[in-house]
Structures are given as C-alpha cells and as structure tokens.
Amino acid sequence: MCFSQFDFVASAGENTDNCSWSFGQIFAENSITEAGSLKEGLQLSFLYKDDDTLLIHSTDMPYNYRNGHVIIVTEDTVFYMLPTYGIDSLMSVILYTVTCPNDTLVNAPYSVSSIPIIINRPLIEPSPTDEISAANNAPAEFPCNDTTTVIWQLSVADKTLECRQNIRVLLPPCGGNFTATDANGNIYNTLRLGYLCWTKENIKSISYDDGLNTPIPNALIYKADMYPDTTANLALYGRLYSWYSAMKVPESDNTTIPEADEKGNIQGVCPQGWRVPTIDEFQALYAFSSPELRTPDYWICPGNNNSDFSAFPGGIYNNTANSCFFLKGDAFFWSCSGSTTMGQYVHLMCNCPELLFNETSKTNGMSIRCIKN
Image 1: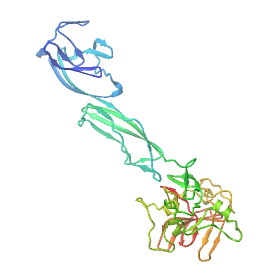
Image 2: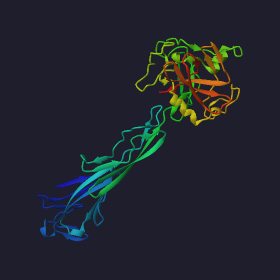
Image 3: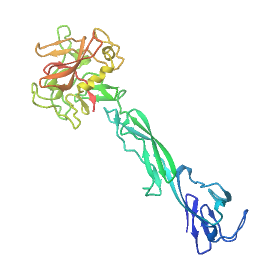
Image 4: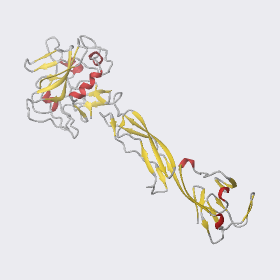
C-alpha cells in the first residue's frame, strides 16, 4: 500500500508488481542507483519493522524525515535510502501537522478591566487527534488594554511542539470624537479614567431618554442674588437634580426602587447606554487629588485638571432653605447609592486637596455625571 501527503512519501508492504516500499524510498525490482543494483523483495532475515510519529508545524512542510543517502530529488520531494537497517525496512509512520492559531484582537466592553475569551485551538491534521495532548497557559480572564501571549504545548508519544498566540484586548471607544447625546440633543464630551468612560460635562437634560421624552420633575438651574444669570449658569454648570429625579423615581418616594438593567446599572437622567455612577465608582477618583479633578477656570481656587475630568463648581440646591449655594466654590455629584432617605455623593471643595464622600437628604439638588454601560 502506498500513500502520499504534502509531497511527503511514506509507505509499507508489497504489491502485485513485486514492489516493496519502505518509509522515504520507492524502489522497483532491479532498480539501478548510484549505490548499485537493488533487487527488492521481502527478505525476512533483513526485515526491520518500527513505528514512529511526526509532529511538525504546517509551515515546515514538505518535511524530510531523516538524513541519509539521497536516491533522487523530484520537485519538492526528496527520496532517501535508509542504510541503518538495510534496504528491506518497514516503518509505520503517523504524520501530524499543526497550524498555530492567528494572533487575535478583541474589543472589550465598557467598565471592565479584564474579560474571558474563548481562544482558538491549534489545527491538527489529520483528525480526530484525541491522542495528542494540548495544554496552554491562558488566564481565566485577559487584561484589557494589554497583550497576553498564550503558549500552547502539544505532545504525542515522545514528540512535542509549541505554538504562540498573542491576544490583544482593546478598550472600547472613549474620548476624542466619542460623545454622548441626551434626549434634548445636548452633546457631552467623554474621557477615560482607568477602565471607566465618563461624560466630561454635567448633565443638562430636562427629559428622560426613555423613548418618550418624559419630563424630569426636579431639574433646576443654579440661581442666586450673586449669580442670577441662569442661561450662563446652565451652559457652564448644567442642572441640579434631586436624587429622586436623578434616579427616575417619584419625588419623596422612598419605597420605589430605581429601575436597573440586568447588571444593576441605573440610567436615570443619563442618555441611553449610560448610567449614574455608584459611590464605589466615584471612589475610583481617589487616584487623583481635588485640584487634579477641577478645571483651572470658573473656580475661586483654580485646579490644574491633570486628570481631564473637568469638574465644574456647580454648587448645590438646599431644599430646606429653598436656595442655591457654593457656585464657583464647590462641586457636588450624586451617586446612585444611598439609604432610605439619604443619597450618597462626592464633594470637591476649592480649598481642600481631598475628595469628600458623604450623604444628605435626597431632596437636595446636585450635579450628575454619567458612565458608559
């Protein structure tokens, strides 16, 4: 029986034309070579029989199994004489070729630092290949914004082979020309801090982005005797929302739970695909000092905005006093976290280098920033 694979010849046995075949050589009776006359036949006294396995990269084909005396070269195929065991040698060979997986680029979702990935296995031919073991060093999750090299170790019998596959996880779009648009057509620039994509300005909408343009009940503009220009105040600092309105629950309703998606994200006053941050997500801003989060303009005590977060001093509406306070001196941002009547918020002061975290009545009005889902 004879067979050929990728211009690589391996065969064993004899046929009706009195041709005997051994691995890597094809001889007929009375063949004449530079080594002399070869009279083929199955001579048991010189018969050698063996089994072997080859495991090679597909890029290495055609593959010359062993060095020896060259009988003939035909195109890409080299036929060898195997002098070690004589002419009449029989060898059973299994040849496996391995095609390594291509390097892979994967786009990560928003708001995660690592993701699980089902990676491609090396292609092994012929199949099935249950007898070939394949193991790799792939992590359970691949870090975002990084390249991980996965090393495959393949083995069969005493043969081993290695494949390398680079997995690059790209962060999703944020910053630059990537923007968010609310139900009223207000456009917000964005920035990436860590693995979170934030809106770069305070929300201004008076309608929920729910497909119905439902009016937001409590969406105030800062107004005080010292700063009466509501048009300018709105343009610079956005609106001040009660916690209830920010989360889209009825005012002073402490029993209704804000509507959340399957991941627990609360859209509230944010545009579609965006959410109100949790207090834990605000605490990630601890990586920066208050001056690094504050803009150099509009504050009584300028910041340097090294973070590019661009916090504006939008002040606060105090419901008990029915008045606005601290424009140009303080920034207050609601989180979606809180207790029955109290909402948690982050507070930036012009004369304090630290971020302050506290809770207050949900009836007070504060600024809103959003995070991409």
